[in-house]
Length: 335
Image 1 (cartoon, rainbow, N blue to C red):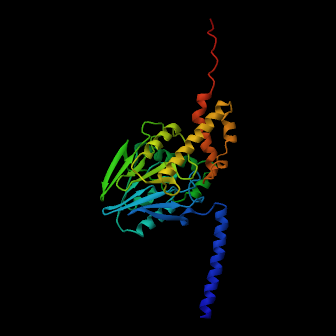
Image 2: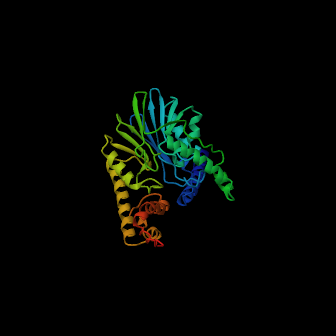
Image 3: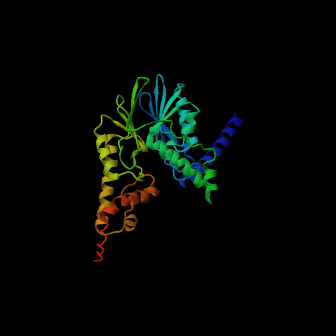
């Protein structure tokens, strides 16, 4: 008995030491996301894989946070929504699926071409799943693969290659333009491109009308600062107003925990506030650079991913600044 207690004590001390080391590294944001996540069953047989807010060191440095993913278990097989930012995290997702069912994985639905949503695709090709996205998203995935090869061949590309060793960029194999419906295993699953026709029509949402669940991908981040990129922010706000009227009660974000209709409205109001704040400063004659320096979002919103908040402001400035640029003076006719 004494020996047993001594062993327990030693394991406990070792465990405490390892935990302390883990906490130390997590404070500095450099722990791998694969060991830090939770899985929620938001409706019967519909699960959401939610990574903690940690910085993943074994992935593309452009996509260090894994996106929220999901999976739907039906009598005919499993449908996965997004695959996180690395094969390692995707294997954790697959592990959680296998804890709940041995049904084959039939489909992977990518809501975006962004690396944090699709860099785990390769794990599900081994499961012989069909990978689905908008046609534009597939094109962006192919472009990303080509650009990644170019980035690796730069002077510091060995660092990127070391971080992404063993990655195989896997674009989708089935595409659609504006909408597609899967009637699968007793579940109606709609994939819709709400920004079709815009500058960035690659985003899509996944809607389960019977379950009243909407996976919004990059269009909704729950208490995380969003990446705007080339997405038309005014059109984005309009789309959020539109989906707020849908018959849904659970909104799955690209990052963060599942939200309510109120959470979605709060995110939409953030975008409206941001547009108004940038527009007001530009009207006052501030340059886009001054706006970016003066508008520090974490002062107003205590959200995750504060390090990308300046990019959020910069992208909105790029969209709004041309409207405030004074026209060039007329040139003399030369007559």
